[in-house]
Length: 377
Image (cartoon, rainbow, N blue to C red; front, side, top):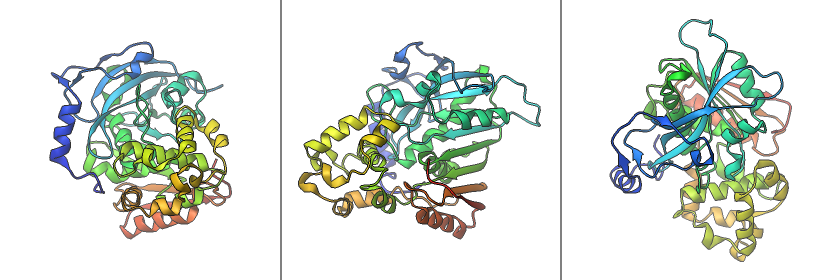
């Protein structure tokens, strides 16, 4: 999908070659059983996005009464929002019950909501610990017969910072885990299986980006539908809505994530004061609910040099362009889309998701739009 900062193929290919030393193509191997699983190998095998680097058997705890499953952690190649190759981890979950429908067992990529920026917040680690708040939805999909793929999103490998809300990178990671899962022979996941993408909040943003990117980035994925809820589609509108609100932590996380993906466009270290640097350090070591309460009702101006306001920062050309580059609705999603939003959403304004629906409909996308009488969480 075309957007700013993503059409520099020759230069980026050169940078990628310099940044990622490679070995000859080799089959994916079983990775480390300990925490070093999350440290990418020094020399990556050659390959393309979606190729499995390594995997290992995993135990996932989906709660009391959850269906029995087989699961694997995966590390696979992907592409960040600027077109540079990166490495992402995740989890592949397959029901142990036989598939009784026609064709291959269908697959859902479940795009998670905000988990927090610390490495321990990664969905793969929380699923293992039984602490992931997405477990009930994942279990519901498995009970319906689907295999479920859960990308951790970029930035949860050792020493990295999540590029939180950099939509293009998240969409790539979700599309690439389909291919990676098929390379685990034991999973029985077919490359031809019907595929869906489901996500809410950050996950709704991810699912929408993946839907828009599908035709150009992953044409071989047999995508048949997307469900996306609570979508932050317009970052300028959503950032203003969050500043000084109960969702202040999401805005802080977005600043950190986008400045990590676009360090030149958002030079965060030159913009924050000492209080801001302390907030960044705290956010990077917190998971979602700790951060939510820590930064509730705080404004961006508390953390900036000269107490610059959010409005002033968003007027800086490079920041303004970067935020606009995250906008959804510029490309038709080629499969049916179910889009949904809470009427009383206190974090993501409903008007901008209605505008997204109109943008998709103007491109003759197949959209069903639903609302429900509740807030965000």
